[in-house]
Image (cartoon, rainbow, N blue to C red; front, top):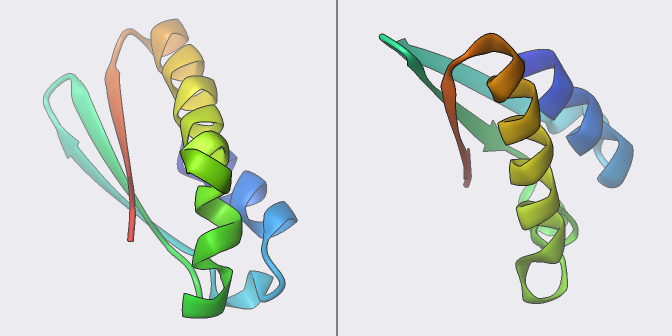
Length: 75
């Protein structure tokens, strides 16, 4: 699931080499921390957070297939 967030983020930003995703597993939940360049933060969040919400929706759909809970933290 880490790879899905990484591919989505790299396709959005101007500096794909600075995209980093950290994955922390805790039982049945997974926390994905997405780090991008400061100038790309607005592109990942989007207007009114629409792109961030879309990324979270895609990840929740992927998590449902694996019976885990996913939290995407953008920062």
